[in-house]
Every structure is written in C-alpha cells, then in structure tokens.
Length: 162
Image (cartoon, rainbow, N blue to C red; front, side):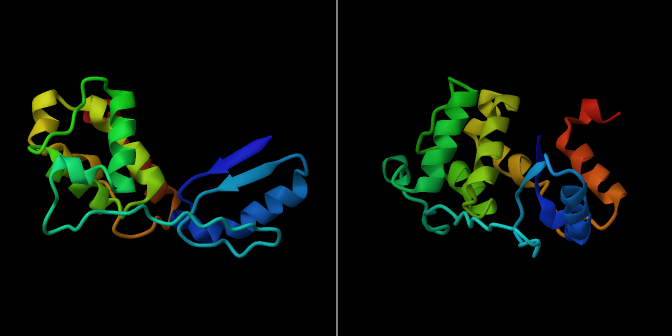
C-alpha cells in the first residue's frame, strides 16, 4: 500500500507519527511532498528545483515566453485542461505572473493550470485568473488539524464549502 502525504511542510511536527506508522505497518510505503525534509530514518530526499522564469518587470512577448520552462509547463497543462486556452501577447503577462507567484514550482504550476477550466475565457483572457489561481497560498504553516481542514476547505469552490 502506498500512502501519499502532500504538502507535509504544513504539519512537520507529525513526522514522528509517520515513523511509528511505518514501523507498525511494514507493507506501507510513503511518498511525501514537502518543502522541508522530515529528517526520518530511511528518508530519501529528491529535490525538485524551480523551473526557469521570465523577468518579472519586463515580460517578453508570447513568442519569447515559451522559452521558459515554467511558462511552457503552464501552457501545456492549461491546454490539457481546457482545449480552447490560448496564450497571446494580451494575456501572457497573467500567465507569467501565475508562474512567478508559484515560484516556478512544477507541481504548483500543474495544479494552477488545471484550474484554468474553472474560469471563463474573458476571465483568463484579461489576467484576472492570476490572483484567483494562486491567492490561496498559505502565509503560515498549519499547526493543528483545524488548520489543515481550513486549508483544504479553501481548495473547494465557494458553493462546495457549505
């Protein structure tokens, strides 16, 4: 069995529990994503560096933007999520801004690009999706189970939150 723990930097204090779980359940393997190492016995750290980003102040035209890995990944994943998504010189700054707000991190870019299907064409065309795709970033790590629940509640659409 594989146990996937995502964004574990939010609950690093729980790392000893993972050790106990793995000791008790020998059939369980874990895959943990985290911006910080867990410092556990048997941990194998695989660092995923940020992808190349364009300059933030002078965003190049669309033709030059695609030379940056972060932007190229966003475009590929957004088009996979929404076939009519196109990048033009008009909305290219919004795409570059999304990639910058996500620090060029591949998984974050993948997740934000997948959200493009939630926006109307006019919405992303004018760049207003940039803030909405990324504004839920935490300013502090989760400290309690309630913090984790709130983090995931914010991942839901407003109508789904209840």
